[in-house]
Structure formats: C-alpha cells, structure tokens
Amino acid sequence: MLEVNSLKIALVEQGVQKKLLVNDVNIKIDQATIVALVGESGSGKSLTAYSMLNLMPSDNLKIVEGKVVFNGKDILKLNEEQLRTIRGAEIFMIPQDPLTALNPVLTIEEQIGELFKYHTNLNKKEIRERCLSLLESVKLSNPAARLKSYPHQLSGGERQRVLIAMSIALNPSLVVADEPTTALDVSLQAGILQLFTKMKNEMGKSVVIITHDFGVVKMIAEHIYVMYGGRIVEEGDKDEILENPAHPYTIGLLKSVPSIKSVPKTPLPMIKGYAEKSRYFCPFFERCDISDSNCKEQFEYTILSSKHTVLCIKAKRC
Image (cartoon, helix red, strand yellow):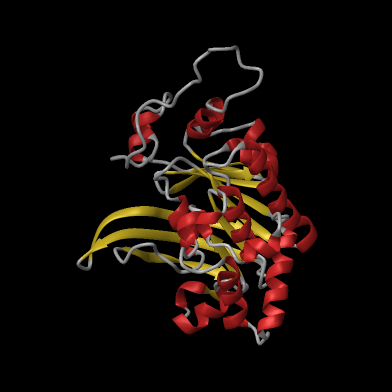
C-alpha cells in the first residue's frame, strides 16, 4: 500500500543543509497490517511518519531525497490540492498529544464534522448522525453529551478516542498513530490498542504505531522497524525481532523492558550513554558494547532471513 524509499530529511537553515536527521529510510506497509516504528526520542520516528503525508512540523525541516509511494502515487510530488484529497481521507495521522491536536475553541462535534464538511456532500443532520455513530464505535461513554464538549472537558483517554473516531471517519486506508498510548494508564492503553486491532481485523485498515514501548509492540504489531540515529537499524516480523533480536540496540531495548518475572528491586539493564548523532558510519557505535574499529568505517544490511534484516556488520555474533 505504501512504500518509503531512500528517505532523507534534513535541518535546513537559510537554504543550507545543516544536519541530516533521517537517513536512507526504507519502509513497506501492506494492506490490513499493523506496523510498529520503534525507538527512543530523537531517533527520527515522528519525522518519518510526517513524511508519509508530506508534512513537516517546521519550515526548517525538509525532505531532501527519496520517495513516498502510496497506491502508486509519489506523495512527495503532489501539489497541495492533490494532497488535501489524501490527507484525512486516505491517510490519517493521529498526533502525539491529543490535547494540543484538538482545537480548544471548537466542540468535538464541530471538529469531527469538519471532515465531512470538506470531503463529503452530507447535510448538517447527516453529519451529526455520523459524528454520533463514530463516538459510539470507539465506545466513548455518553456520546451525545461528548459531542457538545470541548477538548479540555474530556480526559486523556477520551480525547484519544475522539482522534481515533476522526481517523476512521472518512474510511482511510492507512492510519498513522504517534505514541497513541503515552501518558495513559494501563486499562486505557489496552482499550486504545483494542480499537486499533479492530480497525485492522474488521475494517481492513493498515496502522502504523510509533512508539518506544515494546509492551505495545508485543500486543498488536505484526512487523517491526527499529530506528536509531535516523536510520532503520533492524526490521522484521514481530516474532523474529522479539525472539531473535540481532542489533545491539534492539537487544538493549528489549532487556530494558520490565518483566513480571524480574527479581524485585533488581535494576533494569541500561544502554550506556545518550542518543546523539555518531561521528562514524555506524549510528550506534559510541553506545555499543561489541563495536570495534571496523564499525567506524563501514556498516551493511545483513539479511538474516526472508523476514529479518539488520544494519550491523557483527550481527551474526550479536
């Protein structure tokens, strides 16, 4: 359905490229699947997601190379009028913060209704009925009252459900959700993830989940892309990645996930150092426990199986 090919995003100031933030990223999303884009803050996950709609959160951020092909069309070559027919209607992005994503001075009904107003020929009564039906579909309590509410009058979980309702309003093929369960308690997280699973199983939607939480990944993802330093350092089917992680960064992330089987008060393993751009070829060189001088000068994608690829020259020994 969608392919990101050789994507590069840079910080550009006064026409001069200062820093490459996303470098040579390749992602493939099939129909009716849930894909996870995993990595810590600053790894380039959100920028990659915004590129799928040809949107950048700042004027200083530019897509300088690559393609984003959606149903045969390169999104990066479309004009604004053509993009408006895709954004919301065919690809919907759920931003990271549901409070700032919603307009504070418009009611929930007005905000959902805008989708139908600009993309359909429905009248006011039909739009209200559709809005009510959407809130019911995401199991929001007392949906009629919620339509008249403003965003600040809803809880974090309720606002997240409103955004999910908006994401399916126009029956898009692809939903991109940026950290959809952050700051929600465990019960609310489970409810949100069940909605995404329903979208995939019952509606045939594809979903991209951007997260740093491997607990979320284990619950619903089918394919995983692990990002670090603006690159995809490992990708494969969920079972392959979780059972046989090959990149030192992926191994470190999985070891840092709390387990119910952990010995009480035992500190979780940590990846040394901080996420920062490497001076060397390997983006993870400074934080890696098994790197050597060869890693400074080269890296390569190693195909471990038909469902598992890793960016590491030492992958077979990881």
